[in-house]
Every structure is written in structure tokens, then in C-alpha cells.
Length: 515
Image (tube, one colour):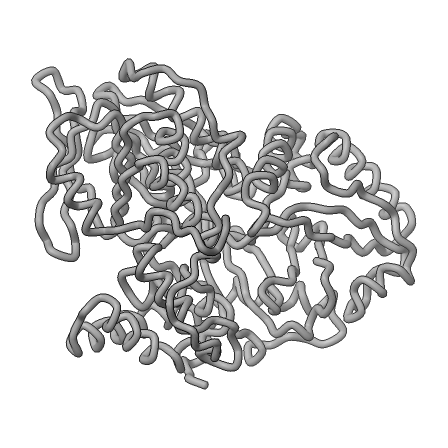
């Protein structure tokens, strides 16, 4: 997008006015502003449907901002024999790269092998990956000798004596793509609103869902939104909303949390990622260059229920550190961790006794007796296809105007190309490239309402270096207060709330500090 052309901003006040002035039912009401919900809003709006989306917190507050930052087919799903999921994900990987090249790009992965037999084993499996990805535009896999492995991974230790295998997958910034998808949906007249809690449903005399009762959590005013179809896209919280619709409903989701840690770049210099093909718990583990840092993860720990702000457990961090230590020539410790973040997976539960690592990563759509359409499961890479399937189902369920999906060819706006009027190029902190203009853009165009919105999702400061982020929180609050015309009380409340959230991004055994 040319930098002198600004798209329609995400404007919270304008969205509220649209909702309040609407007399006719919307074609589609989407509850949930993560990747799935925003993807549905984008799909529906590009088909010409009238769609409104409400999100209880901020867009991407939960799972969608806490991924491994990969757009991939899922190499490990080959081992599970789920070729359909891998094939579909690889197709979606290519579409994302085509439609959002500003944030989706190829990344080289190296699998170090301890024997030539292991090298042949992984290479043959990845050749099947190549076949499933034919025509995708990513480089195919190839075998490397031991010297080449070290050239790609100069800090590798203890492994790679048998050479290795190199393959390509995609990498992205999850919340940048999410925000850009929301901006793109807005250009197609979707109405999106964050900090709007859907707490109950409006039903007809026959018991069919006819709308949603919402509270604007900023003003505490009520918003009643009528819709011909209502979609529950609340991820790991979908069962809570299903219980509001039907108290006797059985759970669809088995919640699992995944933890990532962020280390300084010198632990894995260069541009290649390291993939550990089998850890002590049977999963794979990635060490990935990301925003001039190293992202390491993930874990898979079953939890009793989903919560808004999950925390890493000591044993999860210990597992990541121990696994990384076995592959790196310098042992990382708690003192090296610059940030730790935890996300909750909404895994489809077919067998309640199964381990979460073995549960399906595919998505599931369910329509209740009242007509509530729930989607859960899936992963970031397949969000476009998930959204297409949901809108197709909504068209059929609610007899909406039938129009073909257009998102295979819908270019995603690069929201970071929007240039606010601040000319000061000075970074807010020496550890980040972000400037005052990035804060202004977040507030003016991307519906950022809190300090956390800006520092966790419109920028990635909190995910990269928590201590350094604490050092700029007050300055960011000052900039936002000016933009939002808020007072000192607002600022102090924001800083208090942000400190509470930031505490979850420090390792449990490392006290909060400010640099």
C-alpha cells in the first residue's frame, strides 16, 4: 500500500455509533476478536455481508498473540499420519505469503542429526512434505553435511555429527497480521469493536438465537445487537459461551497451555532456525530468530480451564532450558530469559482421556439447537480456510445471501505503512526500534485503547524484553493520554494494570525488574 494513502482506521467510537444506529439485523454477528473471529469478519465482509464483531478484551489478547510465529504445514503432523491437515495447511501457507508478503516470509530450518541414518530418515519424511507443498513457492528440503550444519548454526553443540536436513517454512508476526486483517475487514465495511463483552443472547419465541447482549466495558453501557446468524469464535473460552446458550452442553475443548521463552540473539546468531525433532515429551521444539531475538518453545501442558492471563510453570521453563542447553554451546539460564509468554490452545476434544499433544489441531464447527455456530480448534496457518468454512455454514444455516469466498485473492493491508505526523525517529528504548510514531499509529488507526494493547500487541515490546518494556511504560502512557485526551488518573490506572499483566511475562523464579 502506498505510504501516502491511509486506509479507513479502526475507529471505536464510529463502531459504537454504527451499532447503536442499526435498526435491521446484521447478517452475521461474530463473538471473539482473535485470529479466527477476525478471519470470519474479513471473509464475510469481502462477500458483501453485513458483519459486526465484538471482542471482550483487545484483538488478539489471548492465544492469537502467543503463537510460535510460524506459518507452516506442521512437520510433526506427518508423523501422526494427518496428511490432509498438512496438505491444507501448506496451501494456506502459500496463500498467506501471497496475500500478506509484508509480514509472512520464508524461514530456513535446520534439523541436526547424530547419524547419517537419522539424516536419511528426516530427509525422506521432508520429501513427502515437499510433495504435498508442490508449487507452493518455498524451497525444497535438502541434506547437509556436518560442516554445513555448523555454518548455519554456529552455536550448535552436541548434535549434528551426522549432518542434518534443511527445509523452509513460513514465519510471521501474529498480531501484526491480525491487526492488518482487521484493518482490511474494515475497508470492506466490517464493524469491529474491542472491549465489548457478549454476556447473553437474545432469542425468539421459538428459542432461536436472534442477537447478542453486549456491555461496552469502557463506558459500561449496554449494546443490543441483532443478527441473522451468530458465531462463537472465542477459542479456548467457547464452552463458556455455549453454556450460556445451552447449560447442558458437553465441552468441546480440552485446554492446553504452551510456553515460549525469549533469549538474546547471540544464543542463535544467523538467519536459520533450529528444529529439535523429538524432545523428552515426544514433541518438537523450535529455536527461531525473531525480531533480533531468539524464540524458543513450545510446551504442551494440560490445564483444567482456560484463563485470560495464564502463567508459565517452573517445570515448563526448566524443560525448555534443558532442551535448549543440550543443543547450544552456551547453557541458557533464568537470568538470560528476556520474556516468557504463555498461550492456551483450544484443542478439539474427542477422547477426554487422550494427552493434549495427541489431540486434533484441525477445526470443528458445531451448530446448536438454537442456531449458535461455534468454531474451535485449528491453528493460525489455516485461519483463512476456517473462516471460509464458517461463513459457508452461516449462509446455509441462516439463509444468508450466497456469495463465493474471495479471501484466496484478498490482499491484506500493511498497517505499519501508515505514517503518522510525528517525525521524531528516536527509538523509545535502546532495545527496541519502536518510536513515538508507532504509538500514535496504534491509537489512531489500530484501536489500541490501553498501554498493554500498545506494548504487547501493536508493538511486540512485552514479548521481546519485559524489563526494558517496563522502563518505557510511563512514556507510552503519556503519549496515549495525549492521543486519547485522558487525564492523570487514567494514566495511573493504566500503569497499574500493565504492571499486573507484565508480571506474567517474567519467569516465575525471576523477580520483576526494570532496566
